[in-house]
Amino acid sequence: MTYLVEEKDGFLLVHLEGDVDLSTSPEVRKLMLDCLRKKPQLLIDLSQVSYIDSSGVASLVEGYQLSKSQGSEFALIGVSEAARSVLQLARLDKVFPIYDSLAQRLQHGSI
Amino acid sequence: MTDQAFQAVIEVEDLVTYYGTRKILDRVNLSIRQGEVMVIMGGSGSGKSTLLRHLLALNKPASGSIRLYGKDIGKYSTRELQTLRKRMGVSFQNGALFNSLNVEDNVAFPLREHTQLDDNTIRIMSRMKLEVVNLAGFEELMPAQLSGGMIKRAALARAIVMDPDMLFFDEPSAGLDPVVSADLDELILKLREAMQVSVVVVTHELDSAFRIADRIIVLDKGKVLIIGTVDEVKNSDNQRVQNLLNRRAEDVEVDPEAYLKRLTENLAGL
Image 1: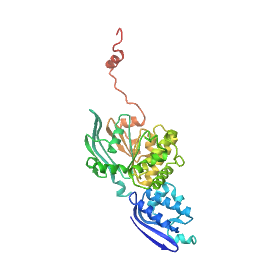
Image 2: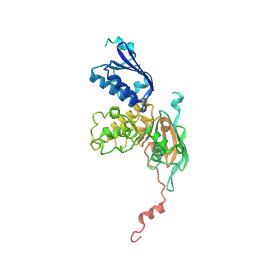
Image 3: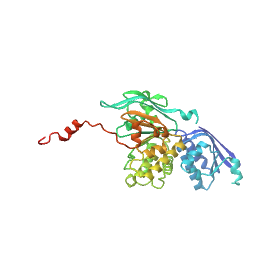
Image 4: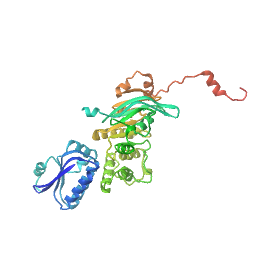
């Protein structure tokens, strides 16, 4: 798994790429918790994620809860079919704010 | 389906096994594909539980071979087998929960044993799986406080907590009422769909088998009577298969002389 963090249109975008599994999800968790220290409006881009397991999703859940308690935004963008089915199984597709892309998020109003 | 979907994850070839001198499995051949639900059926003593133990690499064959992911089980090192078992989720007949741990800690147990994940991640994962099996809110209960159906679902949550590639169930419906049993079947199918997991179910419950199976293997006295789709098994003209489906006890051949002797042996005045 690799990642890229960039600031764009007032958001902090974290692009994840590859497999997010038991061996890589601790890195994703640490990355998110580090990013959240600055209380950013955080978007996690999953469009290049080929596989995400429950540990990866659990890390996203923790990040989302932390950003909620900080009063900042947290959303997923570019959720692939594979990732969506993992989210759906635990009904988390009803929990996370999910957008197709940054552009779609921007259509929903400014920060 | 793609070629990938038809790839065999487990291949059993000419499996023969004994308990002592008694032959339990006799030249069993079977292959289980990725994403397939395979149901193992047969009467008591037919060898179905023994076959399950072999698929889990818990027993060694007397002869024949079992390949997991294309490699003979005998050729895996102990360490490789441990890694392999992390990809297998097992739900035993009685649930096999730890009585001293609450539901959440039972589900979390494999993660705490086998991973270095942060405890927050482990707890969220465990609770996610409890959501999947509709046991959300029961995290703090102890196994003794659960109904039969809840124990099965908690065991299932634990079986899937590591996101396995293969799921094994030993008599999932045993002791459950028909509605709870049907719910559990739905859950098994939902998991297959979402996780693309291969599922092996040992059962003698016909309704359940017909609901969930892609294919069924019927064992009788250690031999394979038939492997086929639900329709192929239902329409089989093999009398033993039909006996099993119609729950007809086999006619036991009676030797009148021997029978009479058994009844009257050592009786006074005879």
